[in-house]
Amino acid sequence: MSVTAADWQQFTPIIILGLFLLGLILGSFLNVCIYRMPQGLSVVKPRSACPQCKAPIRAYDNIPVLSWILLRGRCRDCKAPISPRYAIVELLTAVLFTASFLHFGFTLETAKACVLSFLLTGLILTDADCHLLPDGLTLTGLALGLGFSLLVPVDNFFSQMLPLSLWRGISPEVSWRLASLLDSFMGAALGAAFIYGAGFVYLKWKGIEGMGFGDVKLMAMIGSFLGMRMTILIIFLAAMSGAIFGLTIMLVVWRKRLRRRLQRGKEPAAIARQRAWRSASLLYRQYEIPFGSFLGSVALLMLFYGGTLVHWYMRLYGIDY
Image 1 (cartoon, helix red, strand yellow):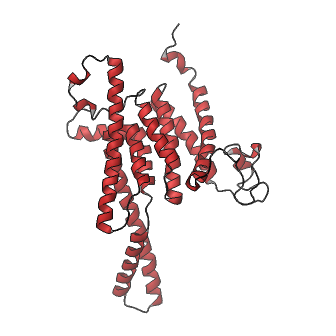
Image 2 (image 1 turned 30 degrees about the vertical axis):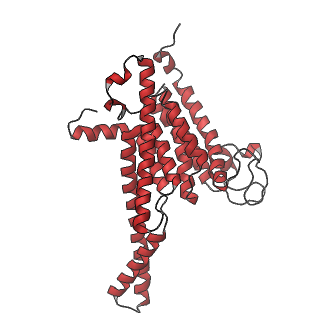
Image 3 (image 1 turned 90 degrees about the vertical axis):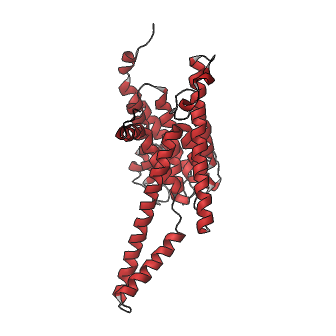
């Protein structure tokens, strides 16, 4: 006797609880990845320990979120503070896993969304912390994205432009998987090529590196999961977000330095503004914006709402998407 979708509905609360708990556990492991991968350390050995006193963390002190609350954010042995970010990452991963199920339902797309959420959360925080995007996450994610395309259809922006005769003689069950794999590969290629090209142009124009190969691999990973159409949108929105963030920092620094110069009262206001702006501009030039964090954050948003956004935009031009 086959099990229908209606039969599965009765298990919804259990599945939600299970995914939430799984998210907490994998979020705890993600904290290990965020801390160790940039240092080139194994994420398996040795067991987790306090960064201050090096005392191994006991099993009952390693329960996601709950242990942090019970210990009041401090090490049991040396009482050194434990960053609340550990609990936040665990809770965020659990929420994203649950949201994936609530959004995509009883489908393989839920598993795909959970995997991408896990990877993007780790990469966003690692890039924000130390401006690194570990290959262990990006390249593994690229392989998983291509693999998932054989199970879950990727946006067919590229394959729909190919002649139908290309698929003649191939069964529908095989042809959609090949088309999806091709769309996944082209999404990865477009994402990597665009970021690499933008970084090359920036290097030639400014004489400094704007984006590294980590961003290239990250965008290839995102493209393999979401396809070409979403890749274009993510790059555009991430560039806008990064520019707004950079200009905001620049203006905040300018205002602080201008206020400091005016309080000294040693120069006219006009001169103080010019020098404060020059100082802020120099700081902005030297500051390395974690662009990977913006790419990852926008990709996470597009994972859940990208289809709705693209549909709305295309409808503005009378295009049925």
